[in-house]
Structure formats: structure tokens, C-alpha cells
Length: 125
Image (cartoon, rainbow, N blue to C red; front, side, top):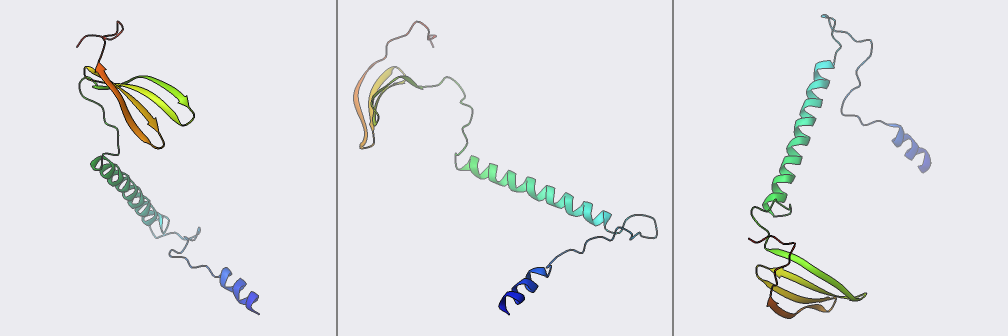
């Protein structure tokens, strides 16, 4: 008995729009819901583009997007060395200084800081 009630409830269609009858034609020869269908599609397109724009604006305001850096970059990873599967040594160049960092799950630690050497492949600024 309960199973029959459930199957009857599934067969009921709760539709917000009535599908257009293929044979329905207005007096001027145009299909009945053609203009309404185009208006809904246009509204849906505008609403979708507006939502995409709002998400992009929010991401930009919250600095979630990587913007193009204007001018020369000041930070660069010069070298990296895996000590073991959990720890890594990294040489980071910042302006005219190089920092040796130990990165691990227990925390990151600055090991040393020295003046940066000019490399032959790097242009002078």
C-alpha cells in the first residue's frame, strides 16, 4: 500500500512551465511561447554572466587571483634540496640577500642569511 502511494507520487510532474504545444500557432503565424522562451534564455544568460562577474570581483577583492607583477620581481627561489621525504632546504633570494630556509612539517626555520652573489646569467638591475 505504501509502495503504491510512493509510485503515484513520483508520476506526478511538478512543472513550473507548461510545455508549448507543437501545433499551437498564434494568429500572426508565430509559435505561442517563442518570444517568452527567448526572453527566458536571454535572462538566464545575463544572470549567469553576472554571477561569474561577481565571483571574479570577489576573488579579486580577496586577493585570490595572481595578478601580473609590475616591475622586476624581488623574490626568487634560487635552489631547493630534499633532505628526506619530510624536510627540504630552500635558498630564497630577496633583493640583495639570500636566505637558507629549512621547511618541515614541524615548522619552517631560517638557517642563515648572506649577501647574494651576482650570477653570470642574471641581468644587472
